[in-house]
Length: 340
Image 1: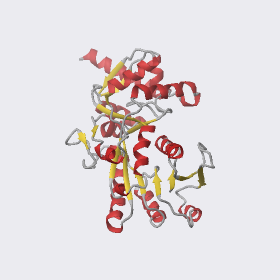
Image 2: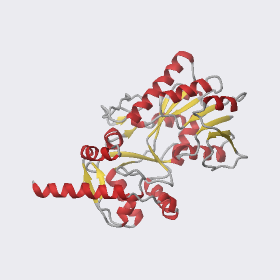
Image 3: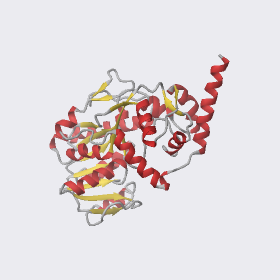
Image 4: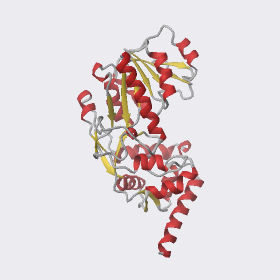
């Protein structure tokens, strides 16, 4: 069977491609700009192109058909409309990566199933994903376009540490604050619930959907079974670093009010996502992938990530602006306590 990956070198897609190469007989093509060469070209065939150049992509794919087209970098409706034009007659299945952040915020029930309504007034990213889903499902209902929707939650790999409050350069500055014994900002009171999924676990569920007739016209979220509070997440990171966590809790509303103007978009990423407790019902994906579970719990996954990050200087991106912002937020709140 033949699969085309659009992207294929990100956190999620890299693990999926590796699993296909190691454990299946799929023939794989990767369509991207060729900026990251992670795979043996004899096993994974590169197609160097910019997916946004529709005419060039159409020419390079002329005469080719696929059993699955896997889209990992489609964020807006115009992008999935382009994919529909390119692949409507070229694939038996089009798998679209949406987002679990599309689920209703706040949800009427803490247990989230694929039937939970989609609505996120706080995050444009999520609203764009919802719009993409609506376009693709309309094409499925009206024309039989063979779409499968996948909604990941917080998936991570060895290159990043899951953090709720961070700056523009990712998690490294938070790690540095922990190492230096400085207070680390955690949204809310730290007790909201969150799912974390290591990318190799995600790949088990995703690859089970590929070529599966029962996945056509359906949506699936793929998350690990482990549910942690944010305090537990940060404490696990600190424990892996061998330091004591100095947690400083700040309301998400306050963080959004003082962070958005610095370009951190905490209205979207916190109020529209990480500040909300989630508990995913994974029974639907388990019916197709019974072995989809938490094989890499967070206490193991975080050590894999830290070992990689601490041994790869290119992953250690300093963020002095965010570090200073954290200090100002904490100082302001401590001063307000004294004045009241």
